[in-house]
Length: 115
Picture 1: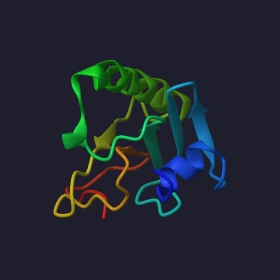
Picture 2: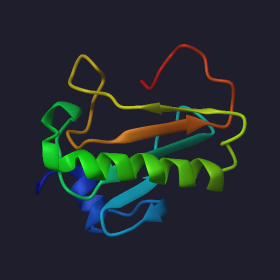
Picture 3: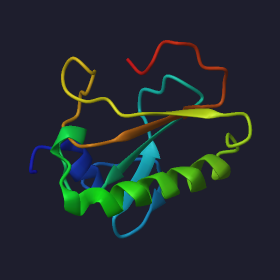
Picture 4: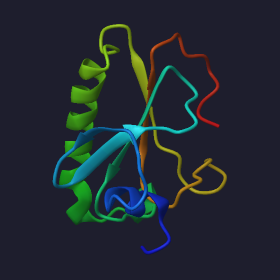
């Protein structure tokens, strides 16, 4: 999508602090973190939302969770714990219409979730 900010990050048109990248996934630090560790993990394929997933996307979603495990170890939050959040739709707090997973950690997290 031409106007998608995450697609622009994937294409390196917008700078970001990338912590992981491969041919299908990119992960970068959130510019407005709500925790000491706040990383967004996104598929390079544009998928607007969780509800837009197709059967062919099952493999990439599984891979995203494998990448999340690598990132939390790399960030040193694996042992103490972390949260993974996927906002879906306007009422769910999704601000960017590109499927993304928030990794939150680095402190004791309360009940309040992203946003």
